[in-house]
Structures are given as C-alpha cells and as structure tokens.
Image 1 (cartoon, rainbow, N blue to C red):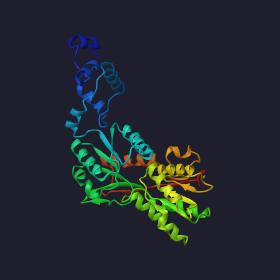
Image 2 (image 1 turned 30 degrees about the horizontal axis):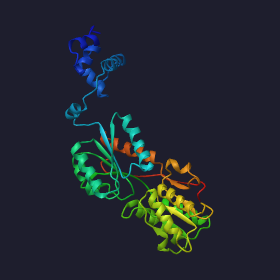
Image 3 (image 1 turned 120 degrees about the vertical axis):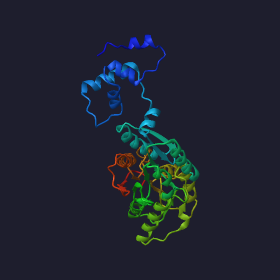
Image 4 (image 1 turned 90 degrees about the horizontal axis):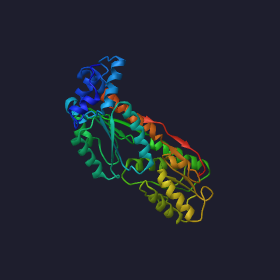
Length: 353
C-alpha cells in the first residue's frame, strides 16, 4: 500500500466524486488493474489478494462505475431488455424474474417494457430500444412478424422471442432464436382431460383475438373435440382478453346458454379466475356444476378455492432458458442459425375440474 488514505482524498477534494484513479491509488495498483476487476476480464489473471484490495477500496471510497463511459468505450451497455404484453399478469412477472436471475449472474442489468398487448406499442418498444442501445432483447410478441426485428438484428443486437412456434430461424441471414411451449398440444391435454372425466359440452374462453396464444389454444380445443367425435357448437367459444374481466364476461355468456356447458377451458389462469367468480355469483359451484381448467399455473392457481386445475408452463424456466440462449448469442457460442426450442408443459390436476 502507498499510505494513500480516504481522509487524504476528502481533505484534498471534499466534493470530488471518486474515480478509478482514486481506487487505484488507495489499493496500490495500476488503473488498468482496477479496470480488469471492474470489467471482470477473464483473460487477465488478477491475484486474489489484489482483487480483494481493489474491492475493499471501491467499497471504502463509495466508487460507482460510469456505465455511460464504459458503454462508449466497449460499445456494450451491459443491459438486457425484456418486453412483455402485460406486467400485471403474474405469468409475465415470473417469466421476467427467471430472466433476471440469469442476467444478474452475467453482471448485466435488466430493463422491463410493458406493451399492454397493443400492436403499435410493441413496435414502439423496438424503436425505443434501437435508439437506446441495449445489448439484447427478450420479447413476448403477440402482433409482430420476424421482419419487425430486422433493424435490431442488423445492429447485431440479438433477439429471443418467447411464444408459439411461428418465428423463422433466419431473417435475411440473421439468426432469430425463440422458446415456446406447444400451445396446441397443451390445450389438447386440457380438453382431453375434461372429456375423459365425462364432459361432452365444453366451453372455451379463448383469449384476445388475432394473437398466437389464442389461435394455438383454440386450435387444440377444436382438434380434441374432433378426435373424440364431438360436434363443435360455436356458441360455446367466447372471446376474452387473457384477464379476469374477460374470463368473467365469457363465463357469464356461457352460463346463459341452454343447455349450459358442464365444463370450460379458459386459455389463461386469469380468465379461469374470472370464470370461477361468475360461477359463484350465479349460485353454482365448480366443479360440481361447471368444471374449469386454466392455462399457465400462475402462483395464485393453487391458493384460490377451489384450487385451479391448469396447464403449467413453468414460466420461470421459460425466462431462464430465454436468457441463457441470449447470452449464448452474446458470447459467440450459439450456432450461426437461429434456434427454436420447445419447453415442457404439464397438466396439474387440482379441485376445479
């Protein structure tokens, strides 16, 4: 050590913000060595005792790295963006948390954008991220095509899309990665379960129109009825918005039918929760009068009464795998072609059906 102290700093420059040079002087090392530690440069070997001296000096001085300056120097922002349709939906909250766990392990920050499931907001978020410079993007895109990501891909900003299997592996030669659950197969599992429990008149609260989850889960519903030789009554299919209110209104419409359905598949857990409220308000009980199956297995699904039978998507694992794929691309270890990865789902049987 050089005998340089924090008190010396305070006397010579009472209002000075600590710099890398100050850290280096206090730790008795070169400024380059401080930079190696701050940037976690794996190509440079820093003795453990030297690293600890630098870390102690950083803490003692209260030094904060200048991320703007670092990004100008390295052309990296150390920031990842997560874009979701509805942050109030617990599915997306848990999904984002899974991403954050991986992002933090890599020493990056995470910023979150909410699009309210509105097409122009989805496109606006991409324009904003292109201008603001992030190192990578993970997005649940309900209304975008692969070409919407081209401006980012041309800037070498990798993208991972979470959602149904609709994105190509390459867009004008640029790789586009995606993770998804097989929504068709998962919906088939939900509806098959209801049929095997003896239900023949099964309603569907299908979710927001013109979105991939709506199309895929409705397709699974139709395919399963056909497989079991059951006719489709289109009055049994109600629109929703993937929220409680959509499920509530859809269930009220189904209960007004004569005969009403004996079971309902709701294409999201929030809509299933709304459906259960409508059933209770009508003086009926689930599953005795109307069985209900949801989709997502959000945390509240096992806490409500009756506990919700649903399709688990393991949204935390979806988030983690999305982030891992993104960092593979950032670190140069991903294949040249984009990857399309299918994640597991599971029918979780509880009390509502």
